[in-house]
Length: 70
Image (cartoon, rainbow, N blue to C red):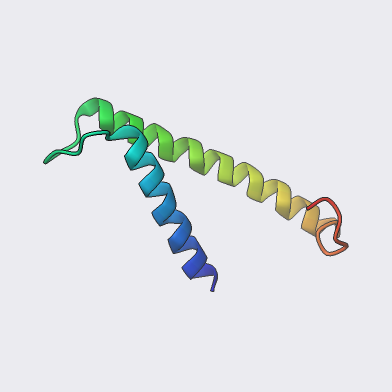
């Protein structure tokens, strides 16, 4: 189940970054499109890691299982 959710999330992220950074797709990415796409993916992964660490910290403290905060 987690793998399926991860795959869906990855697909949505790829679609978001592609739509944002490649307005007119061609046979290859320009250097600007490639830079934009890479930066978009890196921002997302940094945000995801921050949220995941915060959530795991709450779960480890028992906040998540007590129904508080989220």
